[in-house]
Length: 216
Length: 384
Image (cartoon, rainbow over all chains, first blue to last red; front, side):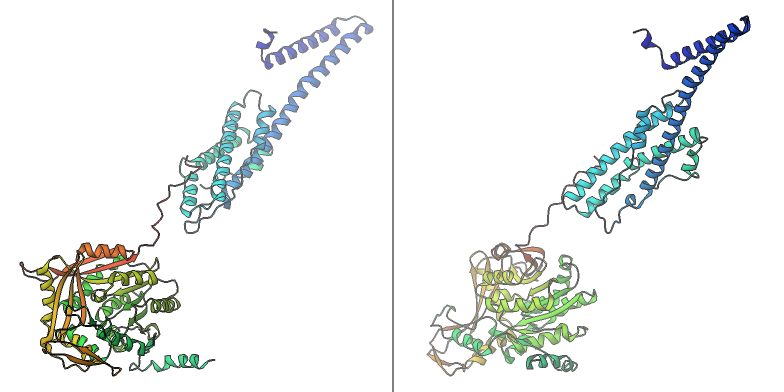
């Protein structure tokens, strides 16, 4: 068991398909060397069973994985568009210096990111960059949403002078601050989706024409 | 509409003629006459603490008003003349301490109105002038002050509200306070008590405390002008008394009340000025009329009653003081007011003469809550 656990999923997939292909080749050879029509039934039946095994188990699994990945990509793209709209929306515009007021901020959504990470849709080789970026994005969104919670508590639980409202707003949108970092990450995610997955039907259409990220 | 309201509505059209002025009379004048006669009924006292013309009544009446206007311009009475001449400069040094926005001005004892004019001119030039409310016990003095103070200034007649009232009486101050609140609302007011008027009252500290308590709100300021002295000894007291003796116009002024309220034949040689050291707070100057005829006299008062005036008996005509800096500080503390600005002007004096001067103080109520400590910024979720 210890020896078996060392091999990767790709190894077992390769061993399985190799065995099936060898068995299929053997069946084909068997048909050619068999004498009499009766003796050919067995290699033909075995060959058909092997073909069914190859297409039904292996190819179907790959197609299902491709579909799951496509679904995850669509969800990620929609979520990215939604978050871009939130960040560019009225709620994140700078406070009026003459009349700052306490705000209820909309929270950035991250359910599609969470689902993409836990579903294993991008667990096959070739998606490492996306997985790493999604982890960073998810952490940043979680951290930003938590700070928004604290900012709302600070400004709504007690009477806060206008200077403090402005200080919180200024700190949130300062260069190198949380909002700035979040927008950079969002740009990275969009760039990766367009570059690596742009040919995927539906992704480019959802992202729309290239446009600058939300103002900050 | 009541008759009273109808009368008030007619006033604005009447005021179109500059010859007319409006004056609100806040108390019964016959009561004031009784107050004067009561002051002259005190028993004999050769030290100058018996019979007296109480403060304010030295200026009550036409003769006294005219005599005071003359005294202020007398070359031999330089204290008042220099005080008026240097007021504009001293006042400008104080303007930084004024509250923002339009200011209403209440002048307690406006005198000849020249100092009020300097103050009103400053406010007018900055577009900050509000109501002007001169308050005095003398109607004649009010009219004189109003004319002088508003000369060459474009103050609407509706913003000028002279009030004839004795502001040293607590009940009168309550009524004055109500009137001012009605006129100005919550806007800041600058009150003034200039020309060392405070020193004319026996209980000067109590009067200042009373004014601060009744009138001053946190947004208001109180401009106080008093005479000051650096020396506090008998020589300085004599020199202070000597300042008042030199001026013939001043002597006419102080005796004018005596002429008005008694049938005494005034002998200017019977007038003396006595300088005393009042504890460690001030030099006290009493201007006294002494019976030096060698025999008893009889004074007939305005109510036709007679009062004996024996030989060497005295009538105190005027009380004044020059405060030491320590005495001034103590008085401010006792009156529960704090300084927000001050200028001290030392008058011209020879090196071997005591240095007298004038102090102009901008005060506010000591009960004003201190400005809140700058609050430490609270936690900032996007900074911490």
